[in-house]
Length: 214
Image 1 (cartoon, one colour):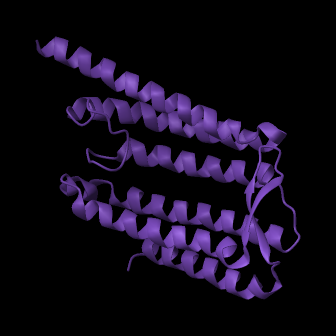
Image 2: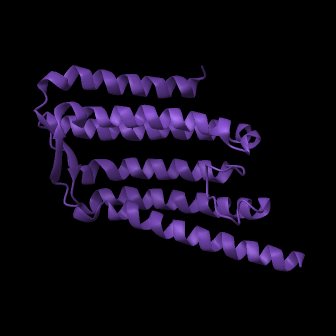
Image 3: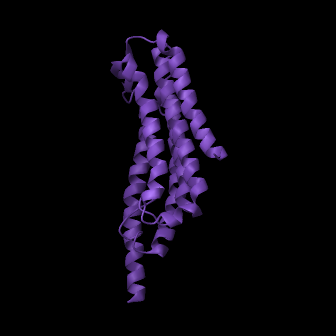
């Protein structure tokens, strides 16, 4: 097992261990959702309130490791495997922080998600930018449009630009920590804009390529 995979396993074990240790001290109802003002507006029974994130972490991690095995373009994964597995590590750490948020509120430490989550989203987006820049054509990872999947050069151009934009989105997301009730908009809006833009960009670049070949 390499260092990154060991780190992923360590995060999962740490998440479960901390949850088990504090479980007896938690209330019967656990905060499970916060509104844009950083106020709790949803609860779950204690067991499910603390079990959801570890279950999601285990399921997503398993899925991420399975995808390269079933991808028709699986031969391309070794070219960016280090960054791909690094993303799994960062994603697991992201879920770990969310679990801490849930547990701390359950224990009475009311740390606003509008302060805690923007930097975490920022780190996730920035790393996603590095992954996107290095991803080779595949069916599961990256900016997968009909045009990027139909042209290696369009894939490359789209992902080079997309990688930069995801990093910028990460910096913007971090700034949300100072935006109060608007914090999560700093994470959501840039990603939505980038997603739409990259679809259009890949379409335009593919059209240019076809006209040049024609």
